[in-house]
Image 1 (cartoon, rainbow, N blue to C red):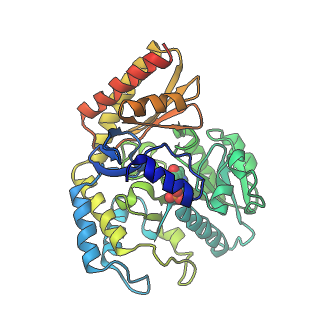
Image 2: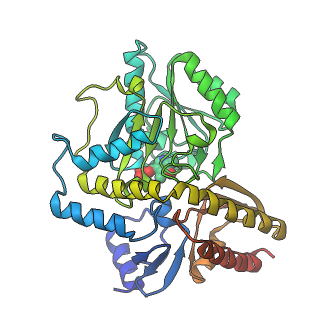
Image 3: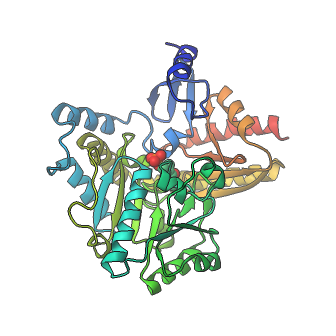
Length: 398
Ligand SMILES: *Cc1c(COP(=O)(O)O)cnc(C)c1O
């Protein structure tokens, strides 16, 4: 089937919820992906920050096929070696002691909220049920995580929303203080807001929120679904500021491309959960965890976060130069290989023109170009990206 045939069938049989480009992706190799008509693209979307090691990484592909041939699923009624080995590697490389595996980012955030409410009750504050999340945040599409997402436009038409959420302005500590009351059990935020437009948290803001949480014994939850697993130049984004949360949520790159989410907590917090409090049929599935384990082993062995930091700094500097050249570029934000280019005009046209030249990029929040390539891209691939983007900008906003 070619692009047009796959698209036609999809329009007939799949629910119409995605703003899809008229392409069907059929194969990937490293930083490149190929559509059903045989066109080749440099992939600066990477499955929306999922394919951290690029497409068809041999270590990940081999781990998946070997585990699939051995045991695909057995359930969490039993211990599973890939799951406990991945848990060990995550704990030994982070500030946390215990892991729970689910299947997605939204599920990870739902679990984190459940743990925060249990923790409050365990600390004899059963009245504390509410979560304070940030404006412009993104936490997922289930009803609870949609509610946590501080964007009115995503809420519209899905009311009643989940109870127990309040919103504060990101990077505004006074606003967080004002939103917290005696019923608050946790503050939820992204260390860099991804979907909302690539807005990084101020280290000073994070320190103030951390201190405030400690004073009140309420929990700080970081949604690192997008920023985690090397994306920002550290294995976890919290490591840049040194301000660790009590609970961290992960997904996107965690499963090496397979659906895998997780939340991690310190023992002090994880102790609030007891058997029966949470669960998942597929969570921590052996194939997804084997893929995640292969991905993380490779990431640590090759210092992929360090590569992301170096390549990201190089690209950011070049983008900075472009902002001086093109008046439609206002600002470059982000770190590592989670970079945003703020435009003064809508970005859809630029995305389309890049696509025509064989470059995949993403536009978020309407006017922010988001660059989230594989973390192991070469300097030559970074230069190819910059060359195509510059050509398109010269056409669109000279
Ligand atoms: C993608 C994303 C989610 C949602 O993850 P799903 O796997 O789509 O449920 C949640 N939080 C952040 C920060 C994300 O980027």
